[in-house]
Amino acid sequence: MVALIRRRQACGNGCGGEAQRANDQLITMRITDVRALWLSAPLEQPIGGSSRKKTWFNRQAVLVEVHTDEDLVGIGEVFTTVPEVALVAVSKFYQPLLLGENPLDIERLWEKMYFGAGYSGVKGVMIEALSGIDIALWDLRGKVENRPVWQLLPSSSRPLSPAPLPAYAAGGFWAPLADTLAEITGYVAHGFASVKMKVGLGIEEDGQRIAAVRQTIGNDVKLMIDANCGYTADQAIALGKRVEEHNVYWFEEPVLVEDWDGYKKVRESLSMKIAGGEGEYTRWGFRELIGRGCVDIAQPDVMRCGGLTESVKIAQIAAQHNVAYAPHVFCSIVGLAASLHLAAVAPSFEIFEFDMTPNPLRTHLAKTPIEVKDSRVSVPNGAGLGIELDDDALARYMVVRA
Image (cartoon, rainbow, N blue to C red):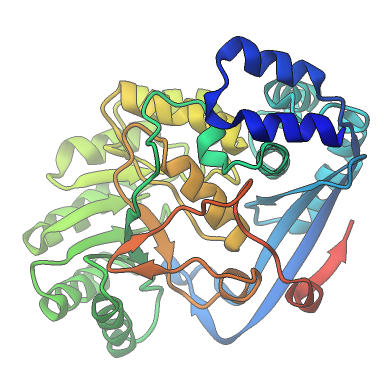
C-alpha cells in the first residue's frame, strides 16, 4: 500500500485522466471506523444573536474522523444546531454503511449515504452529518496524494495556485450600540474593507443601528446586514427601503429559509443585493433558491449542504445563473479550511466570510491558525485540508467522542 501511495504522490499534477483512473483502481485502502467528536469551548463574554433569539455562551463543533487500515485519518466538520443528534447520525447510521469501503471512491460513497438515509436524508441533520464525513474523505484523499484539496476538486476555473481570497469581517451580533460600533471599527482598523452586522431587532432599532455604523465607518467600507430569517417579506422590504440611503451592499437572510416567494418579493423590491442559502441543502434545494430568482448571492455552508462533493455542484449552479458565490462560514478551523478550498475553485466566488467573533475552536484548535491579512485570507496549501490539529487543545475542548 505504501508503494501505491508513493506512486500517486509522484504522479502529482502531471497524470492524464487515464493514468489517474488506473492509479485510482490500484488503491485498496479500506475504512475501518468513522467517529464523531463533539467539542465545546466556553466564551468569556456571551454572543447575542440576531433578533435576540439565541445567546451563545460557548462555541461548539462536531468533527468527524474517517479512519483507514493504513493508519491515515481524514478530518471533517458538521455544521449543526443539534450536536447530540449529529453524533448518532455519524457513528450509528453512517459508520456501518462505510465500513470496509474504499475511502477514495468519494462520489459513490456520497450517493450511498444520501440514498441510504432515504426520506430522512433530504434535508436536516442527516445531510449535515453526511457533509462532515464527505469533507473528511476529501481530506483523506489529499493526504494520500500529498496534495491540497483545492487541487483535487472538480473545477473549470482552478487556478495554478490560488491567490489570497478577499474576505469580509462577520460580527456585529447584538450588543449595546456603543459596543457594536467599537467592534466594527476594530474590524476596519484590522484592515477589512467589508463588514457585516446583525439586524432583526425591529425596523426602528435596526434602522438607527445601521445609520450609526455607516456614519462611523464612512462610505468606503462595504456594509452588509444579516437578519437570520428574522423578518417577513413586507418587514424586510420596509427595513431595506429605510436604510437604502446608507449604501447597504447586501441584505442576508431577510426571510425564512423556505420562503422562496418572500425572497423573490424582497429582491424585486429593493436596490441592494439579496443573499441567502446557509440553511439550504444539496443541489436540489439550491436549484430552487437560485433558479426561482431569490438571491443575488448564494451562501451555501459546505458543512451543512452536502460537503465538498455537493458544494462543487452548487457552485456550478450559481455560476450558470450568474449568481455570486459567498460561502457561509461559522465554525471551527476545520470547516474554515474546507470552505477556503471550495471557494478557491468556485467559478463565481465573490468574497469569503471570516467570522471575527470569539471562537477558541477557530483560533486554538490547530497548530497553525488561519488568519486574515489586508482583508484577504490564504488557502491552506498542505496535504488534504492543510491543517494539523493540536492534540492538547482537542482534549481540552472534548465533550464526547462517539
